[in-house]
Length: 232
Image (cartoon, rainbow, N blue to C red):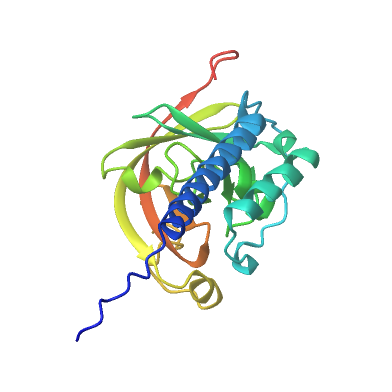
């Protein structure tokens, strides 16, 4: 005589599992909305300060951040009036999306926009102007869209007086950013352009959750335009 197999599946367990999954998705969506909201609060109207301070540049000491930590960093940055230190803006011309640029990459500046890094006295339109940013896998938030840019697309930098237009020419990856900084290599993405070559713009896109490696997009300066008052 064979015993009938017992069915151990409890329908209530299935309901609880589905409920938990829904909560997780809802919370992730909530975090994305909060990140966008805080960023918008900081850059709703970008006012470029000619005398913007150079802030701490400690990119190599940063660890990956969770979305909740990023939200906390944004709140602290707003409380510390970091938006008052905007040195310029980066404009992705195909989408018209823009971000503020700060001098110095740290957890506060990266939570609100793009940050000039590596070369302490970097100047737009000269040498190799390197900007770092977070990819948080949310369209039009921080550097999340940079990986979608194509070779040949134009990216503009704007300061108090000029607009610097760059055409993207090269894409790559830095597998260990800290190591490259500590042991510089010739002809790396961080190198200055050779004598007689065009100035460079280098965009370093780090996953907010993992700061070891980064995607790189690099472009050459193609034009500089003077900005007339009220046109920026």
